[in-house]
Image 1 (tube, rainbow, N blue to C red):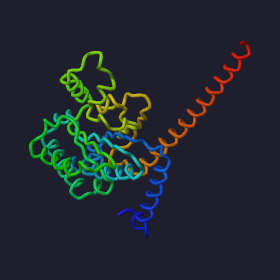
Image 2 (image 1 turned 90 degrees about the vertical axis):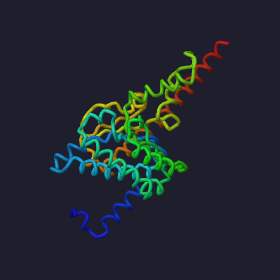
Image 3 (image 1 turned 180 degrees about the vertical axis):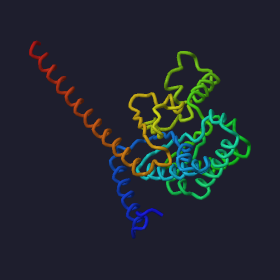
Image 4 (image 1 turned 90 degrees about the horizontal axis):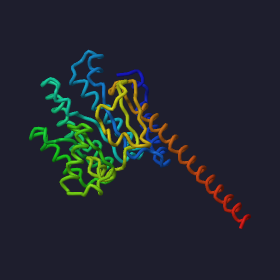
Length: 284
């Protein structure tokens, strides 16, 4: 137990402050609607703390739960988490089996115990090439999606197993099978056939572990203008609500400033148009 946790009322005060912070952000209407997470660093964190890799992934799950809770309380509509890459199948059988077991247990935990889904009205979606998964894993996924399908407040996309390139290929195959003519194929059509089609566009992408690459995650969505990318020099289990709160605060400030600047620019353009109109009348 940490020294802070021994302070009387410590958890109550933290919870109260988190609620006030979340409500303030939500009221600002400047919260990102869609946040993506590359949850990197679980294995390095395990080695750093001299524990088994599977325990590092367990710690990563608990970090994810706390981060998602803050996001949904603050008004985030959609969160997309990179849980398992198709490339991860190249790891040792022991680690792959551990990740599959962890995923099954946590998907059950999230949906059956209602830790997030019932409290925040979250619909769970597992996206990616699920044909690569074992039958028992698929049954748990089916149960999770069926149980939460009527939740409409927010969405949690669990990318498992997933790569951004496979997602683009999946979208193109769907477009081709629906027999669109070449003239009808455009970015919007491809976008609508991605796994995230129909959801709010990505606003904020966060990666931990001090690595400055996207690792084939949401490469189509993340390349669009206006997407904020935060690369953090900490391992995923070390990433907590405090840092997430600071990122949300920065995003809200930038969006608020951007909106006010657009209004100023629009007013300036209108004034210029009025002046041009007056000048033209002088010569009529």
